[in-house]
Image 1: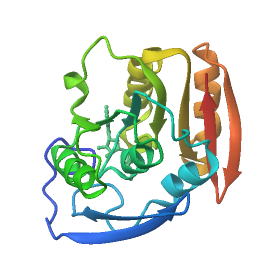
Image 2 (image 1 turned 30 degrees about the vertical axis):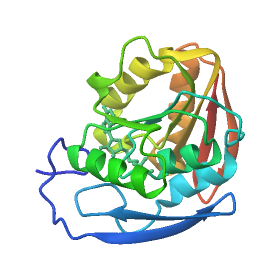
Image 3 (image 1 turned 90 degrees about the vertical axis):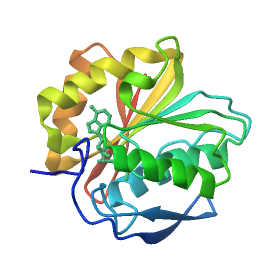
Image 4 (image 1 turned 90 degrees about the horizontal axis):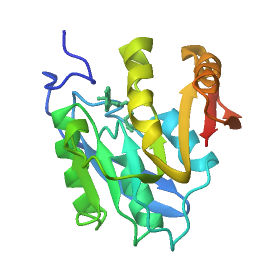
Length: 198
Ligand SMILES: C[S@@+](CC[C@H](N)C(=O)[O-])C[C@H]1O[C@@H](n2cnc3c(N)ncnc32)[C@H](O)[C@@H]1O
């Protein structure tokens, strides 16, 4: 069965534009079938981008958009922090193609580095990690993903995560705490928890 988190999803490739406004800036990004939330900015992602503290204009990064999908988070980060490098990482090849196209649309093609997880250079440490993580892959894979990337925060770095409460936002917060990370609930809106890790 093909899912949005498959490596090579089979769903239709019909293209559409979706528009949204974050931090007073308008974005118009392209999506297709076979990627997460292809019809609109996901409401959880919207809560994350509106409630977490976006980087300042002088921030240099590097930032990680973990599970980037078609790239809305990477596009916003690269726009509000025009000097920063943003790694946009996803297992889904179609998502990576769209994230690269959307990086060009937002004028940040040179600073958004779209990559499969294994393509990110080992030495890179992130000032911030942003993620609307793939809860539906199951706890084992979700936890493995966080165990892989959270240790790659630079000293003093912060991870911002959004999780729907009914999909286990509170239990994920508990698990992250048990892994030894300081974690706080930054905001709770429309059934989503925004977690600040680090
Ligand atoms: C909930 S979606 C969020 C997509 C996008 N950030 C957004 O806000 O629309 C999670 C994404 O994580 C990706 N994903 C699943 N497993 C992953 C893994 N092990 N490493 C990186 N990305 C993964 C999925 O393909 C999917 O695009």
